[in-house]
View 1 (cartoon, rainbow, N blue to C red):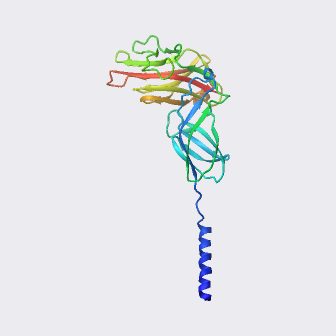
View 2: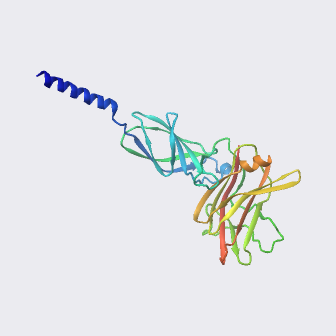
View 3: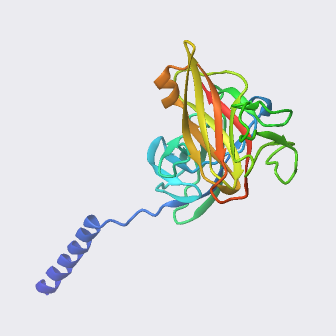
Length: 285
């Protein structure tokens, strides 16, 4: 009898030891985020709310738990209600491998009713920060502030405003570049200096095109002109969006005023090509 009792006690102790060594795993609540929408209470100030948010940094009760692609599903380990903050991120200058937090969008904040094992679907929302300064906007609604850079060029074509519904992204107009073998290139500049301040600043552009194009900046310092093309944009059959960080340029030249450059050319062997543009902005603090 003593042997049997001892065996039972040993088995019970072994079972408890296993539970201590291998505790039951906590089951997460899953948040399925299909998209991150930007809203605005003042479209006259912000312009279009079109966005392309590629990922979010997720905080649970103010503790960072990780960065996740959007759309995606986020596991949250919590056994009671938790405060969730999702900070939006974008692909820096179109580089998919370089996800960075966008300084001009607010985070999505909400309370999660934890139900381990279940999946909650959420459309994240945010808006432009109150401190964001929209130094320049061009939506092609009432005109076109982009001019041909070299008026004397006989092979360059210019950006024109189009109201063709098949070519317009939002509203009543978009910018349109049409390249042909007779006019195989285009290089344009906006018509006035844009004020910029030290620190983070971005250009936003919505686009649709069947050829690539480049975006750059020009500044004038003590009468000397400096310019650089900062990012190349690949062809996109659907309307897309890119965010271009300009701090490397403004910091390099200590620029306080800039102009925006856009350049494209007809692909080799093509008979024609096009670039459509909309909702161009330069934003800083």
